[in-house]
Amino acid sequence: MQEPGMKKLTMEDVARELGVSKTTVSRSVSGKGRIGKKTRERVLNYIEEHTQKAQPEEKALKKAAAPKQEPQDAAGENASEHVTAAPKPAVLKRKRSKSGTCNIGVVLPEDLFASDRPYFPKALKGISETADSEDYDVIMILVDRNDLSRLSRVIEQRKADGLILIRTLQDEKLMEMLKSSGIPFVAAGVSDDPEIYQADNDYEEACFELTNILLMKGIKKIAAVAGNMSYVMNQKRMDGFYKAHRVRGISPDKSLIFTDVLTPLSAARAADTILMRGAQCIIGADDVLTSHVLRELEEKHVQIPGEIKLASFHDSQLLAAAKTGITAIQFHTEELGREACRMLLHQIRGEEVPRLTKLSYEVTLRESTK
Image (cartoon, rainbow, N blue to C red; front, side, top):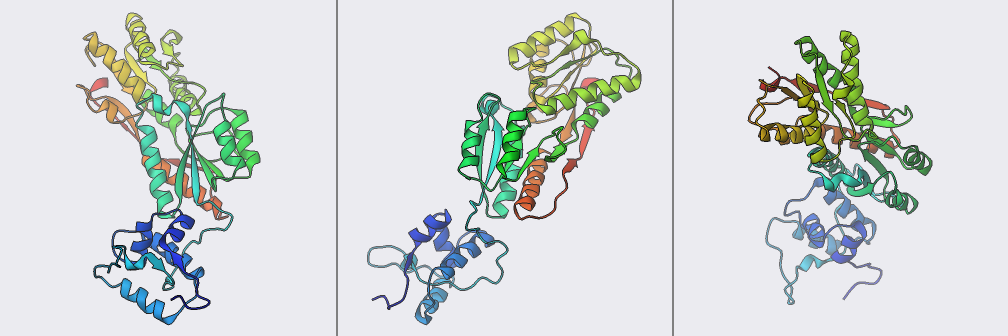
């Protein structure tokens, strides 16, 4: 019989309030099974704060924490199903805020699922790993230029403690919504707005360096195939392309520049036109476009680098299977996600953080531009 004044918690109560599974609660109490230290501390702290201590219950919990098989009651359920007290954790680095959600929202472009771009999964992996290490969960919010309703709903209902933008749009409406929301946010991608916290790859400098190397090798007639130019990332890539030409005193052939190329068919058509116009080299602004161009060249049995050279402003596994190694720029996308999440967590905790963090890159020269 329960003693007077004792408040009895069930595993279901704890799991529901903390947003974890009953298995997580059971493992936190018993000390058995794979579970993160911070998650265990959070569960135990919650139990301690919502129960009254009693010596018999403390002994029972110590016994439950011993490394042996949990006893079962007559109904076949774990005897630790009813939790009444918990030992105090030695250190609790972060408590769940009464007004917080312990959620981080990741704002993604609506066309994410219409492409096979490995960039997004890698960035999300870095964000998720860092968020999980601090006991935050990640929710995805899809937006496009004409529909910000999902993001608006998350902001109005305060469903996240902070937001990360992946692949920034040059969209004043989106930025004004975020600025006026009062919710901390970070752009995992470049923005021209100096007020925005940003973690980014140095796209302009990287693309300048690769283009400059090709021009120094005597490759003067270079074509470029770029995607959606409403994204700042693509603008910076092309800025680097044009900057290299200016530095070398060479005027790029505008008839060989194709932007807003959004489909495999349009990329193939661009490649065909570039071939007819006698370009020496094609640079794809990202790995997906480069792979589309490569497929078209291979289908037409065009020799790389014998008949035309090929390079990419972004390297990934999409290009790894090419018969000829493709010259490309390697960025650390997972680390970009981690850095953006770290910056956001600092903001949420009210700590100082630099407005802009730029990550390193490597230009890898391969057979395709020899």
